[in-house]
Image 1: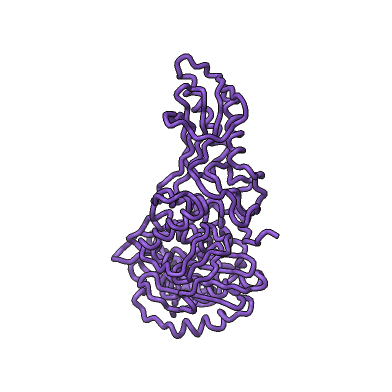
Image 2: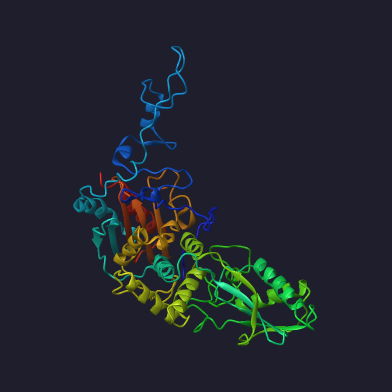
Length: 495
């Protein structure tokens, strides 16, 4: 039986242009409160006063509703001079967020109270027989809670946080992965050169085919209708093509050339049947596009490296790396995660293989001065049970992404699913659940392994990073609510 992994939510989301974090600084503080809020509702609860004011009733606090109905002149817009019999100005509701620069990062912290809050929750039977946890204040780096925080655990898909951080650190958020078409010196061979973009589309190949046809038409003594031979070059990646769990609907063969992650249907997320030959399929799609563009292609496409003297006649570039990272984290996209790991390996001078990616990611994280002791990156996606990571490493990575001096890492936070609204957390929180809209976190699920790592703003306005890794769980339907309860509890602490 194929190894069970999380199935991303099919609820609508926009991983390419998803919710963003406000990072503008003012008076030395940054507006991290907004991270925890729902981008859909624009609702953030960041202070103890607001949360203590009363229960929620259909999205509105009863206390605020009572205040809005009050007749006292407590503020509001004045549109001219009111008449004696006219309505009074609408009262202003109390601020939902504290003024910029006034967050209480220096407020007293009470780790003992946090321990008392989390202790009964972390012992939930549904989490299995081994649970490790870390909670830190991202502004200070201080650990507020830890249980086996430095214990290496199987992280499942939460390892994607490490993969994404390493890729952004090495390549930068604006990096794009190029797929090219090269024309041989005699203009008789066109080579489709894979760069490692798993999101390459049929439309992109049609555009490249049109550009290639134009280039052929400009050649002296060259009939623009061909004929040409078509080859495809996948030498950018090395090592095994199949992931250890393959064949599997959660990941395609890992090659430098594929269309829509090798999916044989029209989906763009979640499990789906994959082609056994993604590179060959991409080349055949390109051949058909060349024919439609007026270029005759002789024979079937074959694998071969591009000629050293071949010139590039068409190029397609992927979405920027920050968008790829957000899509990876929001939808728990395994194919993009493996591509990010290999792009990191190439940039670090390592072989673009599972082994090379492991070395590259590890070395880059060491440069970020995060605790990598005990970590083992068998893959970039978290599908491999040989992966090991500690809760302390995950929270340190989230803190690095929140660092105002490292804006290039911010997509690690903006890509995290929002509880009850997006990605793999879209269906995990009921509309009226306490944590809905307040928690942003990466999920992880394998047989007997459940994890959750992300951020939440506590009642004092502090941005907390947390990581809960559990193993030995029998039923994900019991483990996931237990993890969600732990994250939700953090939002109510620090009063």
